[in-house]
Image (tube, rainbow, N blue to C red; front, side, top):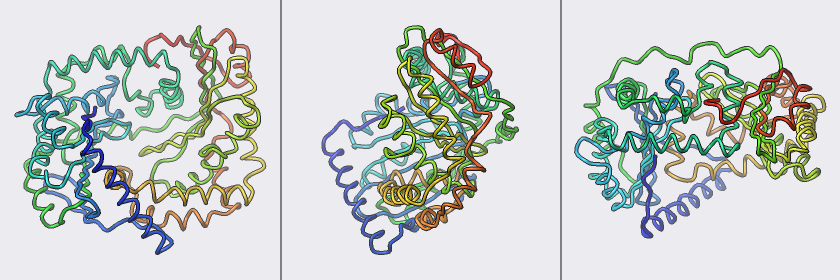
Length: 471
């Protein structure tokens, strides 16, 4: 849920900040030949809240990111509860209605957003440093004293149900939810983050209040503050405002169970009778975010399907005109991940598009990567890397990601070196170890009567109707 800026001056300020920060980052990387994470301080309050403070004085802005142990893995069978709870944080506070909260923040040109992902929930906040005295107490109240207003809850719940219903009309919006459930089965990583219509329909405000009490807590959470401030003063401010945030007993972890073992290839057909295209995902398990091979996998994924000149895009789109878009997915979580290909094609081209996708994957395993292709991917990643950390919000999000996923400065500081040192021999080892080759999982959303006959050549077939509840 987002409260956005709607005024020209704040937008102009953010744009100027982007340009200045971008210039500073590029100047430093050009001078040293490598990008390094700017210095920061890390501390832990007595209540368990981990705090990161990083000064960036190019523009008078402050960015905050808070990561909370409140992701969809904690939903149980109440799918969508984490997402709805994250939204509910912005329904108002003990002293401010939702309308008044939005009025104050928009009047200051501030922007606040809450969201839930699989492993955690996040709150981000951007504002001018001159408004600290107003904004930081509001942030405290959003986290520690949200109103969880029943009227706003009912409105958001109805809206969420409408969104879930509409998403079923747009296969691109739901194909990965089907794939995650097919891949992870009953494991919490298969939980649909936004929920399902039957599950969300059953959620109550009491459910949200319970989830808030258990998961929106300082212990197990991290707050990163990046921007134009002095660290000693900011330390005092954060400690004063948030030391009263009471820790709670962490519920029993739900993501420690084993990842399912794939014993065979399976195909899920999701029938959309009026479809003229087939949207598909093909793949398997990937790696956790803190895996030591993360960067080597990223390099190979880039050349496989992560850029316009990738093997997949060249074969399916440029050479054969089978699709308007194809990419390889590298999603990493705390204890697992996903490596898969996603694309779409006209119904009559479904078999050819899937076969070409499998041929390219087979080429990755059997033929491997040549030096020129590898160098192209390395150049692409090293050229793109610094701009991905050019804003305060990106740096704040990075710091909280380091907390959630357990990786350190060496990932950032050694990024270009690690990427540059990738060799053809190393790619062979990484591909064999991490890129799915057999027991692949397939999800095809399209007209079942037209694709049913070819699906069985790829694995055991199961069918669902797209309008059936859930995934």
